[in-house]
Amino acid sequence: MKANDYHVTMDALVSLCKRRGFIFQTSEIYGGINGFWDYGPLGVELKRNIKSCWWKSMTQLREDIVGLDSSIIMHPRVWEASGHVGNFKDPMLDCRETKGRYRADQINVLKHKSDADALMFAFHEGASDPAAKKVQKVAKGNVEDYETVALLDIPLDQYGKLIGPDTNEPGTLTEPRAFNLMFKTYVGPVEESSNVAYLRPETAQGIFAQFGNVCSTVRNKVPFGIAQIGKAFRNEINPRNYTFRSREFEQMELEYFIKPGTDAEQHEYWVTERLNWYEKVGLPEGRMHRDIHEDDALAHYASACTDILYDFPFGTQELEGIAARGNFDLTQHQNTSGKKLEYRDPETNETFIPHVIEPSAGVDRIALALLCEAYREEWIPKGEGEVLTAEVGAKRAPEGYEARTVMRFAPCIAPYKVAVLPLVKNNEELVAKARGLFDQLTRRWKCFYDQTGAIGRRYRRQDEIGTPLCVTVDFETIEKDNCVTVRDRDSMEQVRMPIDELETYISNIVDF
RNA sequence: GCGAGCGUAGCUCAGUGGUAGAGCUUCACCUUGCCAAGGUGAAUGUCGAGGGUUCGAAUCCCUUCGCUCGCUCCA
Image (cartoon, rainbow, N blue to C red; front, side, top):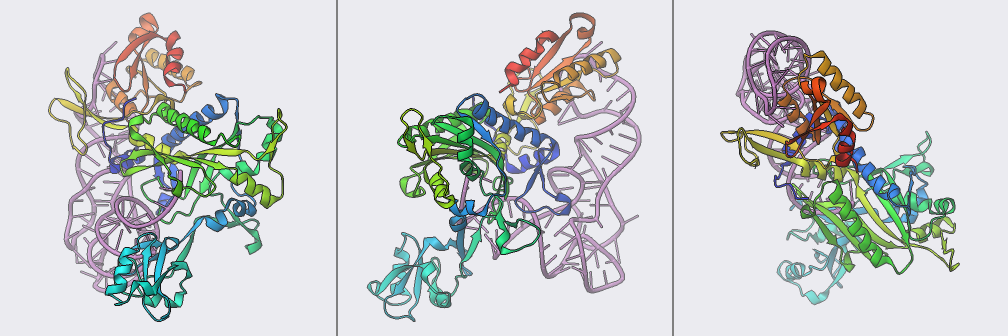
C-alpha cells in the first residue's frame, strides 16, 4: 500500500468530520467541554470497525489469546499496586516572567553551601552550565561554593531567592503543583474519603487483576494473552490536536504472558505483528515509524519499549506503545493483594510469575490517523487524462478538471461498505429491484441506499464518506441480464456482474 | 494552567454602533439512462454563553466556555 500523497490540513479534516457526521464536539449545545468528543453516525461505524478488526485479529484468528471486559472503576488498591497513585502525577511549576513551564522533578538547583541567604539557580537536569555561569555573573560567586540539590527539596519560603532556568531575576517561579492525572470519584452516594475511587487510566490493570481467574478457567499455556478493549480516563493537563489527546478515550490492550527470558524475541515479534495490522487497516509503511526507547528512557522494570508512530498533519505522534514489562505488574498485585498470581508449567511443574509484553493502542488515535490518511482531494479530467492530486488549499480545480473529495479508507474499516443505487428513481420496477438488492446485502454489511439526484452526484457523495463500492441497478438489470454495475471508489472503474456473484465479490474486497 | 489568535446558518465566510447576509449543503418537485454543483420552490441563526455601556450592540467593555498555536504531557 502506498501512502496518500495528499497532505490534508486539520482544518479541512475537522470540517469534513463534522459535516459528514464522523466527529462532533461533545455537549456542543452547551459550549462543549475540553478534551471530550462524540462520534457521529459515521464515526461510530469507523470506530467499531477498527475495534472489530483488532478483536478479530487477536481473539478469533488465534487460539492463544482470550478476551476480557473488566469494569472501569476498580478497587482503589489496584492503582496503588500499579504505581498510578504514587507516580501518575507530575508536579509542575511555571515561570511568571518567561511563561515557561517545567516539570519540578526534572529541575535541579545550585545552592550555596553555607550562605542560606544567597541566591539559588535552577536548571534543567543535566544542563547545569547556564546556571554555573549565572553564579559568576549574577551572584559574583564561585561555583565551587555551591552544591546541586533537587528543586523539590527547596522549601517554598525560599522561592523568593530562586532564579528560574531561563531568567536572571529571582522570585519568578511559582510553587510546584501536583497534576494528578487520574479522575477521582466516590463509590456510593456519600462523598467520604474512604469512598474514593478512580476511573481507570488504562485497561491493562483489569487484565492483571483477573489474571488468576482467567488462568484457571481457560487452561491456556504460556505464552498466551488476554485482550481488552475499553474506555480509559486521564485528566490531561492540556488536551490538544482535535481528538488526539482526549481525557476520555478508548484503548485496545493486549497483555501477552511469556516465559521469563523470552522477552526480547516476543517483543520484536509483537512490534512486527502490530505493524502488519496497521498496514491491513490502511496505515501504510511510509507513514509509520518505530520509536525504540533507549535504556535510560525506560521504566525501571521494563526491558524494552517501542512506540508505533504515525505522521499526523500536526506532527509524528504515537498510536501505540509496545512494552516488555517483565513481571512487574503481576508481582505488584501479588504483593499488594496477598494472592498468588503464579503460573505452573504443566510439563516441567515449574512455578513462576510470567513476564508480559504489552501492546497498548489508542482507538481514537487510530481513528484519527485513518481519517487523515484517507482524506484526499483530486482533480478529475473532464475528458481523457490522468487524475491529479489536488493542491492543498486550492479553491478550485484548474480548467478542464473537476474536484472530488474522497475518503480512501481500507474497505474493512469504511463506515459503509456498499451503496445500492437505482439508476433513476422514476421507474417503479427499477427502484423495487434496487430496494430488494439493498435488503439482501444489508443483512451482511452496512449498506447505504440512495435514489436522489443524478447518479454521478450520488457516486461523489459516497466517495466523500469513503464507501468502497457502489452497486447500480439499471434498465438492463430488470429487462435483460440480472447484472449490476459495481463501481470502485478509488479508480472509479466499473465492472458488470451477475447479482448471484455479487456477495462473493463484495466479501473478497470488504471483509477483514 | 500561562501567553497569543479566533468564535456569525450543517460547512466556508462577508458584515465594526441603526431591521442578520452570500456561496455550498439539506429537503420537495421537475429534469437526468453511469461520474456532482440544470430549473422551480422551501428550510436554517437567541451572531459561543452571561453581564455591562448605549435610545439602540454581531460590532464597544468585563467575565466565562470552547477551538487553534507555543510551553508541557501522553494510549
